[in-house]
Amino acid sequence: MKMPLLFSSLFKPNHNSMVITIKRLSLVFGLAFLTQAQAIELADLRTKVQERNTQLVTSEPALGQKYQTSIFKWLSGPPSVQFQAMKSNMALGSDEYEVGISLPFNSPSALQLQEKQRQLDSQIQHIQDQQLRLFYSGLLRQVLWQRLLAQQEEKIALDKRQWMSDILADLQTQTRAGELSEYALLLWQQRHIQSQISYAKAKSELDAAINYYQSVTGTTELPEHYVETSVIESNQRWHSHPQLQMLSLTRQQANLAYALSDAKQTPWTLQILARQLRGPFQTENLLGVAIDIPLTWGSQNTLSNHIEWRQTIQEIEQMTAQAYTQIRQQYLDSQSQLVFLQHKNELLEQQAGIAEKITQHLQLLTRNNEVEQGSLLLELINQREISYQFSKNQLLQAQQISILNQISGQAL
View 1 (tube, rainbow, N blue to C red):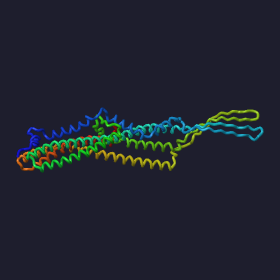
View 2 (view 1 turned 90 degrees about the vertical axis):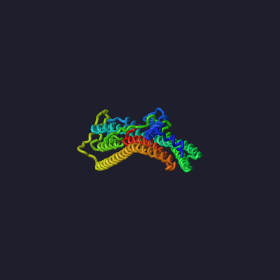
View 3 (view 1 turned 135 degrees about the vertical axis):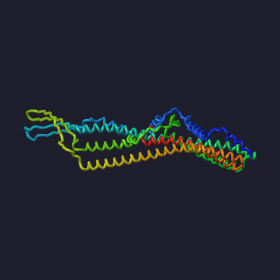
View 4 (view 1 turned 60 degrees about the vertical axis):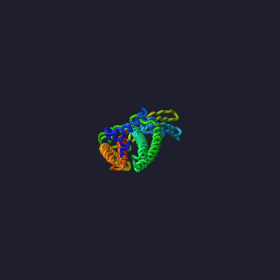
């Protein structure tokens, strides 16, 4: 039987290797995203996401900072005023009137601790900003890669549908000419219908992904460069994760609070007094000061404070160990997944070479009428699927690097 025109045109003696074809197809699918992207960077897009969701962020920290700056740092509390009037019941007695102002001062050690507390609060606010950036970076990475993967699936499904439609038209011509069995045509028609179903599903998922992306970012624009590079090299950098840093600062905060609750930090009190003595013969005005300095020695914290502090430290240590273990395990799992995807690329290239040789053998067998032409059609589909897997695998590798950066605490 004469070789159908379709097959003879697909398998010319000087055709390119299947591996080159796979890489070319994957490059086309990969660059398809960049052709639609506008000039916007990931960091700028993350800022857009954060600004768009500012209504979810409380303004309490700013109010707290304003409250702190409204009180004199050297006072442990508000000043108080005392009034005193004493009337004598004797004819020649003196009446006494007194006005006093009490100023509770922090002790020198308390001032040092409060200065450390202010510095620690500044560090905590910085880490909170990092945590917020990391949160919105994770949100952006999620919607971005969901859209990119859905967009690639839609492009693959569209390409497959069009490719099968073109071949179907040629197969129908070959069948009418008696050069192709009806079985092979029916088999291809069935596969063609399935490709239409796959495309409809992929298109629906892409529309949903775009809507979700727009609801989070406020735009349909894609970043100009969405592929990240791995910025973590060793396990030691995990300690710079904002979650672990916050737990470390929380422990320091608990230690400072425990130190400030000690009796040694009891405020010193300065009193400024004005007294007037009114007698039958003269009026005497007196001015003076009084200083109240508590006498303390050693650690004078209460037992209940000590128990509460110890329990707090134990809880923080347990939370730190759990967070570190979780981050480390998630990172190692994702790293293993990345290694698998890289190895899968190599295997797909080998599989492509084998599939090409199988197709060449099937071509010869089909020419000699030793196998049904439907087998060759199935192998054509298999080769196409390998090219699709290769392109998807490359995008999954880029996504996995993004996941690794998110797990290790690297914000956009």
